[in-house]
Every structure is written in structure tokens, then in C-alpha cells.
Length: 169
Ligand code: OFO
Image (cartoon, protein in one colour):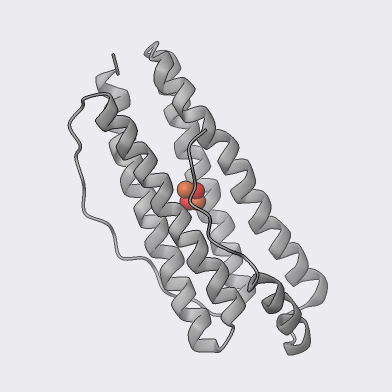
């Protein structure tokens, strides 16, 4: 049976995942307004993946016959200035999400809730990928600079990202 404390922290994580989706959507709108449609595509695809992350936790809690406590989603900070600054914000945010996932793993272990520990393992791996993908884009932006010609090339590459429903495995 799922532990009460783990149930509470997983409910909070649903909120964080949906907040992430909001944040990426706000970023997508910023890039769209700049005419950087590839960057807009990349962040919009990420927003959809964040919804999947939230839904996977939702389904896990439902399968465990627990009550779901949906909380208000905060308005994201939209102080965006440049592609580099946005991607630095993304990395900072993903590191914060990684620390939340780590906390869930620790709590599950402490509470001997091994089913939840096993469940959250997928998110631990997912966060490695989230931070790596963002870090790779920051590296490219640093390497090529914020000039228009290089932004054009990175923009073209980010336009290729396609949404695939994130399945829990
Ligand atoms: Fe759900 O991983 Fe990003 O925030």
C-alpha cells in the first residue's frame, strides 16, 4: 500500500509537472513572437511531454486507489530576454525538478514504499535526459553565439523535434 507521505509528495509533483508545461508554453510563445519557430516548436513539444509526466503520476495514484489533490498552478515567470537566457532558466528549472524527484525517491525508501520507489525510478532516468538535452543546446548557443546566422541554424535543428507520447516503461 502506498504511504500517506509519498501520496502527498506525488500529488505535489503532479502540480510541478503541470507548472513545467505552463513554463515551457510561455517560453514557446516568447520564441514564436521572436520568429524563432524552431525554438518555439522545441519548447512546445517539451510542454506536451511535461503534461505526460503529470498524467503518468496521476494514473499511478489512481491505480493505487488514492485521492487526488489537484492544486492551483502558479503563473510562470515570463521575464524572457534571449534564447540563451531562456535555456539557462530551463536548466535551472530542470535541476529543481530533479531535486524534487530525488526527494520522492528518498521518501519512498524511508517509508519502505518500494512500489513507489520502483515507480519513481523512471523519472530519475528521465531527468538525466532533460538536463542533458538542455545542456546540449546551451553548449551550442555558447559555441556559436547569439548572432542571427547561428541562431538560424540552431532554430532549424530545433524545428525537427517531434512530439511522441511519453509512455511509462
Ligand atoms: Fe517533467 O521533467 Fe521537465 O520539468
